[in-house]
Structure formats: C-alpha cells, structure tokens
Image (cartoon, rainbow, N blue to C red; front, top):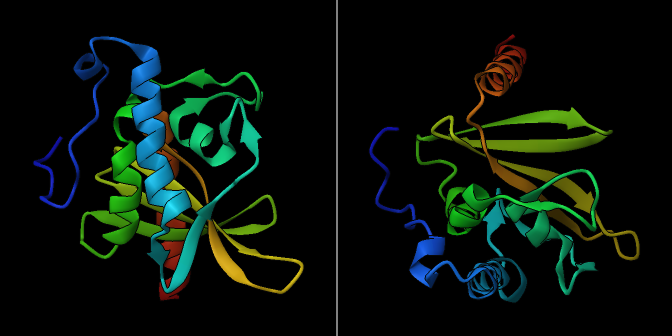
Length: 168
C-alpha cells in the first residue's frame, strides 16, 4: 500500500479495546452515528444519508459498512470494514483529492457512484429521491475492502468502460 494521505484517519483497532468486541463495536457505531446520523457529509452538493431502519438496534447503513452477507439480520462482522469506519466520510469528503477514483454505474436500476480509494477500499453511493416531497439525496449503500484480485480486475474494467463512455 502506498503512503496514506494526511486527511485519512487512523484505523480503529480491536486491540485498542483489549479485544472487547462489545466496547469496540459500540465505539465503531458511535463514529458512524456522528458521521452519518448526527451530521452528514456532502457528495457533489447533495447530502449523504444512510438507511435508517434498525437491525439489532443499529441503523442498517451501519451494518452494511461493517459486516458482510446477504441476510440482513445475520450479517457477519468484517473487522477490516470496522477498522476503516472513519475512512468512509473522509473519502467522500476528499473524493477530488487525486487518490480516490470516482465513476458512475447503473445497478439494480439505480444510478450509483463508486469511490475507490487507492484500489483498496470501495464506497458505493446511490442517488435517491424521497417520495413524499421529492427531496434528492445520496444514500450510502456500503463500503468494503477490495483485496481480491478478481474484484479489482472487475472494478478496473467497469471504471475504464465508464471513462471511455465519457470521452467518446
């Protein structure tokens, strides 16, 4: 991994909590809550919000940034995601820094933005519009490490196709 930019926060490590998972996950949640519930960053002028429905007492958007799995109720904690919880907001706020590649994609019929930091950490955002009043915002879908080479190849291909479509 290259040297990290000064704006990128340090990792939050389980070992700093003496391996106490409950204290650790509560601190990780506290950071997420501050960054996406109490306040919100902006992406291209629009507020970034997360899914607010509660799963096991915490917002669904939190679980999507700290765990993996298709079953919403029984996702598996991902320590690498948890360690990088502070990165999510920082990367969104520094998406024009030169070390974050950003492109658009259509997935599940939605316009999505992919923010890929240093080819190692991906954030997925989606354009949304509130039905009751038309308010437009960006929803945080997920954030995760991209370590597997097949995943990196797929993301590079998707990014390159998007870039070619913008230049043609």
